[in-house]
Length: 290
Figure (cartoon, rainbow, N blue to C red):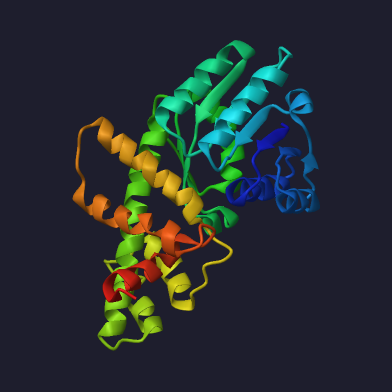
């Protein structure tokens, strides 16, 4: 089975690495020269929209923005001219309405789309330590399990198309809160005279721990915000998706609301390319008014 990639950034590049390691022929479309170089050095083959649909059976789409997503849709509609059946694994964090529109637009081109977002950071993707929320046709999910198994620890069939993104939104809501809580706990511990490394050592396996504490608190301690495992540029987009989803149900969620407002200040005070662990710097600024 040949695998195509549209998007070879932090996440897409990690998926490709694991699939190439497992001897899957991989063909990629990606604008960034550094990402292309990494992919080709691992054995991947650069391709184009005019070629990819003749070469592959499954395409993994992993994109940074709605604009990129819409651009991909237009290119697929333009260049998918053969009758070959293709499966697209939509691993993007995009609104459910946009995903359904994408699926509907491609049905006439003999393209089946599965909604398959993941839970996990870029560092976890690099270690194949992801959970996949797979939604759509059960037969196609089963067909793609060997692919998913190459770069994940767990694949959960969550039902009808779009449910994957609903679970992704819930997961990102918790990530927003847990990341902020880890930063606050670290800062409070420091003010109480505790050593940073000891704070992490004691809390990481306690009942109060979380994946965000385990993965991000060491970055906070070392102030290691580049290269990002998840950048503000991407995460602020994800927060907007969560807010829109909450608004659809006419709800107010105070814990998420308080946490997300801290991230809003990232564009003013921090680099958009920094890891979201640097919310620790925003917490300090919020408290000290420096």
